[in-house]
Image (cartoon, rainbow, N blue to C red; front, side, top):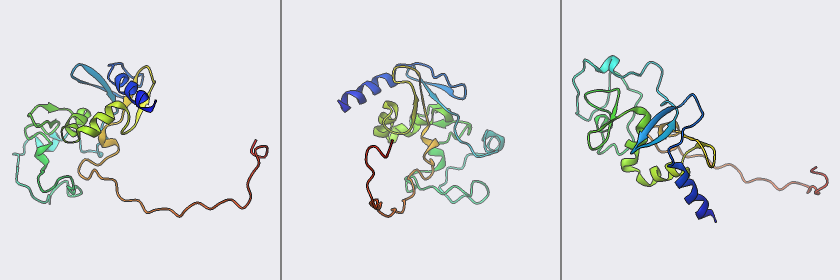
Length: 176
């Protein structure tokens, strides 16, 4: 039964309907429309071209010392550098492995290149947060609404103590 519910959710998630939310941005992937909120940029950081338009791209992997010093790359950092995801020629965009430019509100396409299973689950409504109707318009959160793209793993949580058994049990009539 759960399998059928998940399968139905996956089929409904790709039906291309529009969300009623006015605060979302519409994006398309292979002819379908996916409603997402705007990316959570830091204040004053976008558009990136405000600063990067006159800068020559530097593809050397290094520690940033002038700007973006708060970014610590812990996302396959042995093999990745900023320009593996951010477009070198127009920093207001990301780019896929094919070189195709994608907007920041389509960043799920970029993430999905390496995290295909999570991307599939996200589109089916199993991973991440999806709002809307079972058989109607749906809206999705972007990967970056929950994960820092430079350090995507959630920090470990300290376990809480076990719950304590109540000293006396309520009867059904007391609870109502």
